[in-house]
Length: 314
Image 1 (tube, rainbow, N blue to C red):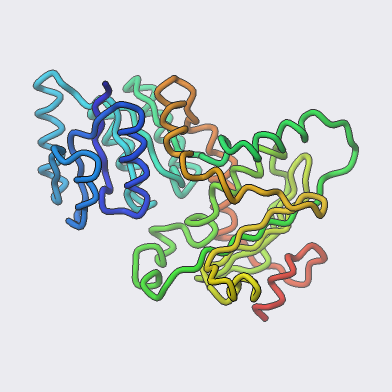
Image 2 (cartoon, one colour):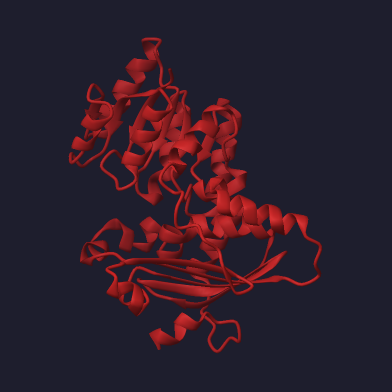
């Protein structure tokens, strides 16, 4: 049984990590979050120690290590801008890190973590769960196995509506979340790279605090993409059914069905990490570079490859 610590226990994604640790037969012995709304821990590890002050959490970890028990892994679910600092803390404490996406906000942060991996002998693994989705794996295998001299035409639309709270949270602060494309979309950009190869072009056609859109070109695909947290962007027929989230990927006009199969992907990710098959720092580089560019690039208008949803924003 492996011993885990959890950083960011009050976060939205933390329960998936708690479930993954439990379902892989391991335990969380200590958790930290500056907020104390963490009663969900009782559903998984009621005996876990908990701290709201990082200094006390740090001391507890130190005493754990000094006492010989140690922490095998630290699961990191903190706000995006703290990920690299918490990964460094994990490695300095003698633990491997399992970090939520985005692993870091900027490509140069990856370099610092790689240096620390070399100096400590510890590793950082990340959750790139779409690489484990059966539909995505099947499409990748199809792309890799075909012989063609033209690129696939891909449309990616992802709308995951958020209430008014979102704009009052750290997620609305670009310096902390990385903005819309980073916060809600980085795993989709990783998925596109995983399926279609090296990134060759990256143009931005819209970018504000609730929407982002652009064009990406890969070795094997041309991609128009659109992302939003505004419920009004959900297609009207879907909203009439009460849907507040809408996800669509078409490849050469054919819809790729992958709405199901998400519920256990964090557990699958943990299984792979514990078996030595996790996704490390360099695996994240293309997606991190892509979203960092999207965050700062000049917006171009009037492109012939603009996603059709962009017209709704004008």
